[in-house]
Image: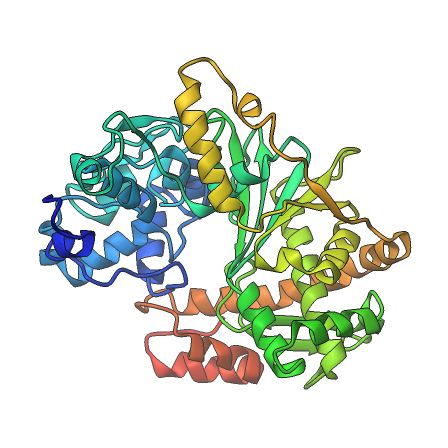
Length: 459
């Protein structure tokens, strides 16, 4: 590139697809089922790639592009993740995809750290060449591009380390240790932990660890994170986080038995949609008071996280702690509920942007790895985590008693959505408005949905 041009000027004609889908896209259900069938089922897919096929993952999105616009796909020279594309801008050449971010594609075998040929072939022809070769996250890709040296004065000896995704970078930024669990409270909420022996299942994800590429990280992602909290804050606290916190203070742990589920978009874990409120007798009710609604949202989000973390392998250890990050981690009242639900102390960092911090750690680690330094060596001088909340024994007892109730109610919601998805197997995508009929009208609503498109059978 010429140093006289800005990036957007130099690259404006380089993209074969101008608008790429974001992580909330759920339009590739048909492609997901096809991918799973190609490898022998959803569990086989999870065992190979760390996750069953997910609509937002790269593999199904590539398959959809090839199906709907094969000319665009065939005219594409390189397929990049956002992380590897960003690295390419610094490198001035195509950057390889790192193992950790590459684990979220349904294309990489997490056991041997190579692309799965069957998955590639099921997506589109010639995909391996377009993806390049995956590399460990600490890999030095090369020196910075002459363009950036000329335009911005970078040293020509500046190295470019492989870029990774926001969740692996957050894990690095939080300096996770064995027994810890990180809860990232961002636009989407994520829970991740260090795994020595992965046991991929139909729920959650297993990624290759970004800082120890022979280990793994478990991850659970929820769409309805801060987006749900912001919506309830707007509806019940006039958009005031101070009033939101006050409502948490004015209500008791356990919310007098009231439980709520708040899925404004089709959720990933668990698969569900809609707003569902239950009183202490497990009877569905149409509304809560504002204070009860706010506590119900926060308790429900954290109870669900604990349930699904335990399914992925989380268990309490004497040294267990939660490391909280993301925008909502600056709210002490939210963190208190988190500590009480998980029965462990909650720690935070001075910065709430652990992904950026982790990316910086990764760059330093990449430079020093060749000199024999480990990741703990690299971060040994970092500031200690700050204790932000201790579990309240009385609240812990309340939430432990609530877990089974919450689990049973959540699984009921999950069962109905999975059933509808099975009914809709032959349809290109699951329409969220149609899915919502299931919860609004129960079996009557589902029968109505089934009649929209034939052949279809209600089981």
